[in-house]
Image (tube, rainbow, N blue to C red; front, top):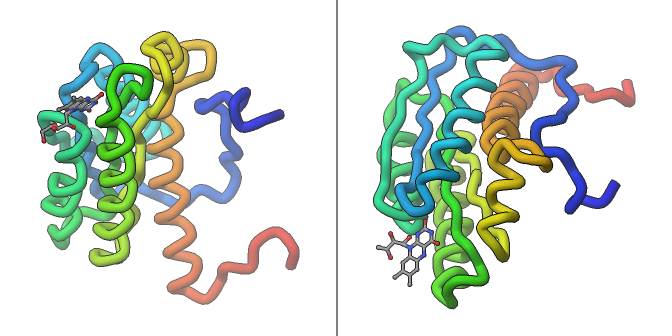
Amino acid sequence: MSSADKNLSVFKTEDLPDISNKRFAILVAEWNTEVTEKLFEGAYQTLVAYGAKAENIERGNVPGSFELTLGSQWFAQRDDIDAVIALGVVIQGETKHNDYINHAVSQGITNVSLKTNKPVIFGVLTPNTMEQAVDRAGGIHGNKGDEAAMTAIKMLGLYSQIAQGIAYGKYF
Ligand code: RBF
């Protein structure tokens, strides 16, 4: 299966950590809001489905994807937040701005993640058309929000394993 065909809502779920006491922040960009709301729904429902408590999930809105970086930092630098999920949609076909926005956000979120030593998940769709975005926000290719939430969960699990010295993986 090529990555273009991957269903974003289908993932391996063995060995997931207990996230019942983990606190999550979800940031949602307000551009293309009909799609970003679907991404939010997917991320929120996935966190709850795999054990997060609703009261441990906070949400923040940012005007556009460009602001996801600073919004993520504000959440990630809080001691009680364990992971941040940043959600947005930048349609490549519509504006040359996409190059600047996508690059800035992917780089910015990486920096926040490394600076705060926490998972800060890049849940930004960067399709060529709105149709492709809809296909990946609860459509035929699943939901990028689901995938972003699962990535946060798996990174928390990996961190816990590494911190405990039990990150043996499947080869041992
Ligand atoms: N924000 C998005 O989240 N998705 C977009 O597709 C998007 N396209 C933009 C196109 C242009 C020409 C401009 C100026 C901004 C766009 N933004 C988009 C908003 C951007 O992320 C940011 O909120 C603003 O540039 C203000 O800093």
